[in-house]
Image 1: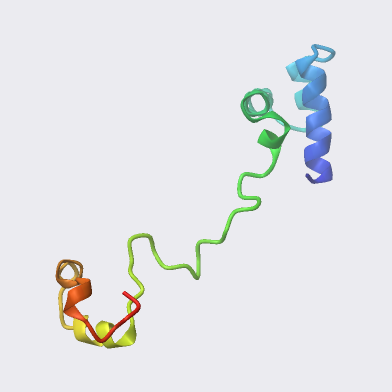
Image 2 (image 1 turned 90 degrees about the vertical axis):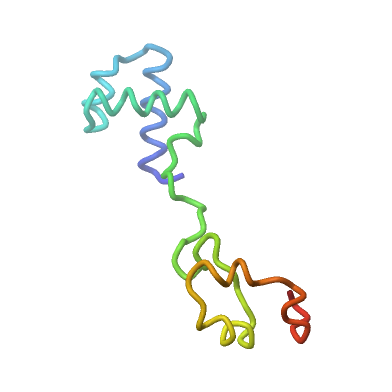
Length: 103
């Protein structure tokens, strides 16, 4: 957790204990009252981890094959190159290519 997230957490715990109001917390954090309410909902739903950045510890999407795509051996890829978009999935069966063992 970053220092900024820890500071937010401290202030939001004070709001949760009702030591300060949401308006005072918003002024202290430099946020709007509405955003403080949203952070409190995240805190209730996910605990302390609910305040962490949403994309932390997630794998990057670029460089990965798109969902639903198939990695094919080069021999099959050249054979299926002439088909349309839907045809390879219909025509692709393990018995169609006995020379490829990795299917």
